Length: 465
Image (cartoon, rainbow, N blue to C red; front, top):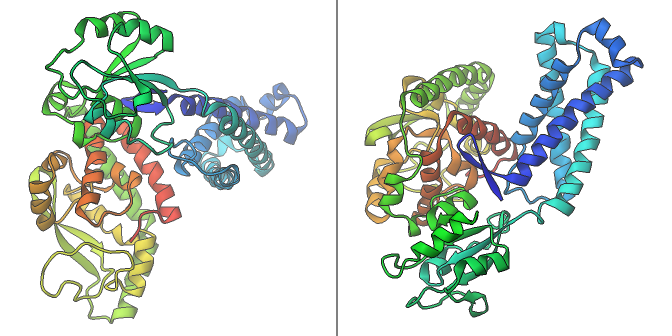
């Protein structure tokens, strides 16, 4: 089951888990204070002031760190040992950040002993909650869904959701076959269209998903209205797939859903918040990464010679279809495209230099793009900008491809997080579905969550090529 929080669909069990662990982290910090000072909290309060602001700060930093390591992702399917490793890395990272925060704000300082106790207690609490969640809760809290439709749309969309993460929030109770529609789904799951509300009550249905091949013929208005008034959710197929998969499925999309549905908005407040985030974050990244920029520049020069170009300027298509020059550290040989024809980057591409292989893996080659962000050509978060040649080809073959240019392209984005590096037309189609989801739902909080999750991509080297 998924709930909508700040404009985004969130897996309800994960939201509940985050709330429980937030309280647990705060209690772990308070327990650490009591253990370290061996006095009641009332006595500690007289020495250091109220401990709860420190506990709130500690809990918030812990949640952000664990979020960055993918521990609140619905796609996280690591075994318990893998979760323990990620949890330990998240707790250590959070402890380091909290230590820095306490040095910057000395009035909040409580000592290394408290942070040590708090880290140990937090990790133990995290292991307990994760064990209970993975063994008891995660697979037992799901919505029961009845699909109204048994034809091509139902078979090619809902039945094709074979990944465990895509089905983590629901179970299919059956497919209702409308009159005159051939059944393509498994016959043992096909139900008759009569007495829809009674069937829903008998099967304890939480939601009916309308997936008819032809809604102009025998659309069950009265039956669906009865279900809705009885407290059963009724959802269109594109909305259901968007909610459960985190992408907009192009094969079931129609323009009216985009025109009349929620999302796809450009309001002044959102534009201002996006630009403010771009400027502040880019300046911060540029300042912090100066040592890496200097070392990368030196390494490129030492490998290819002092006369070799340091940066790579390449035409990309940006907001509104305008072409700009993206800046990157050069990671390929200088004659990577001798004939001038654009080529997709491939796995183990021989054109990549030794230094280029390292900086691509660590995403350091992307750092100069912060200057594109400062200039306004790009945003920090958005669809990946593509070359004009690829855009021209893909726009002719893939429907709705030009719609990705209604927001600024970004250094990182939802598609980059959810799908590996794309190097084909099929990859472009898959990534477009995630890009459309971002364009439909982008908010300041969504951008911040993408930036935090990008930390995991960089640290784990996911998707780099």
